Image (cartoon, rainbow, N blue to C red; front, side):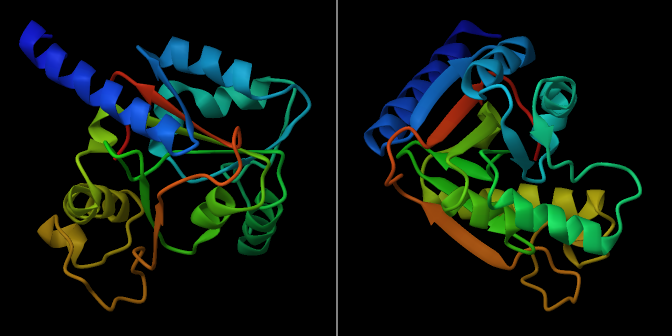
Length: 213
């Protein structure tokens, strides 16, 4: 990477971590997937029940395989052959998990987490329930403020995810949000976490790579 661009990215990560910490959210910088998994191993106590929020980032760093192979009880939403009823039960149990592992649609330099959900199971567990929430993001998820976070979701995260999930919503054709009324719309619950009320509950791992949507 060009040294001047590296400087810009390094400073953005630094500002974001400083402000997350001010907002009572523990934050860490790691350089790659290996370091991210090592940090997960440090943050997740053995024997924990782990809930998972839908995330391509977790797959890309190898986190799903990591927790499946570890000494944990995984509420595995990605297990093959699950029925809708079984999936719903996994989502419900995730609210009572010891640890909830997920990503975020955007993290602002002000130390805020912005997320848009389809059913709300992910943001519900981020907001309340599990004693520990671990959020893994790549540098592409870092934005200046909430306004940029909204744009990021509308122009990148939502269209990419609807395309991946084969939802057939207007954004799968246009590549950007159309504020549709589709029955298969995935943008339904909008949340901003500005601060964590319980110190030590929420942890954000920033991987110095572009990951997920």
